[in-house]
Amino acid sequence: MIVIVEHLEPCINKWLLKEYEFVSTIFKNRIIFTNVMKERDRVLLQNLGLTYSDSVVKLLKDVDNVIVLDPNADKELSVDELKSSRYVVIGGIMGDNPPKGRTRLLITTKMNNAKPRNIGKHQFTIAGTAYVLRQIELGKRINEIKYIFGFKIKRRLHRDIEIEIELPYAFPLDEQGNIVIPKNYEDIILSYIPIYETMILASNNDMC
Image (tube, rainbow, N blue to C red; front, side, top):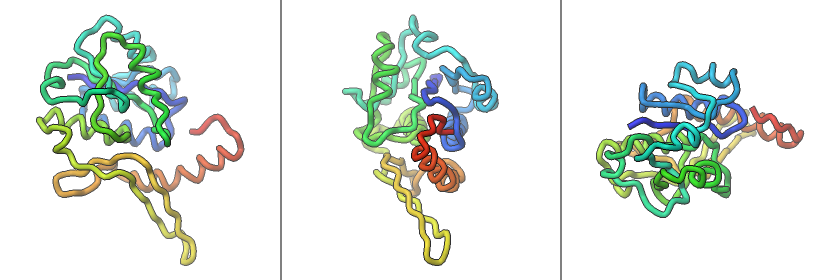
């Protein structure tokens, strides 16, 4: 099984890169990044896996046994179905709240030969999706994979100032009940969110 991440954000910021690094760590030499149209983004990803500027829609248009992980899919991904698949496509999307269904719009509806499947009723992060996918590959059914919904990050900046960020996504838990997130994930998010909000207020379209 080859895992394909269809890059669908305008650029790769530190947060998104951390998600991609985690996917690469899990699937190693079985990872491909598609739709990476900017040269600077391909350079960032060159050590994480193969990269293509073309979309997965074009690259796999005549290929069978393809699964698209789509939160809006009607059917859940099963262990047996995953075993028989050649490619699994993950949307390289920083999820919206509420979800906008971008995977369905930008991937699923354009890949008629692919089977859309979900990994539960909630929206996972890219890293979380990769972890759940790997657990299914190892033989676990979706209802056997524990997760939490919503993750709060708190950090005291000063004696009287505390910042709190809540991520409205599902996060898988490992066998010990620990949340599965990339290394230094909290630090990346805490440093990125204030910059992102500043850009929003300034109506800056480049959110990198």
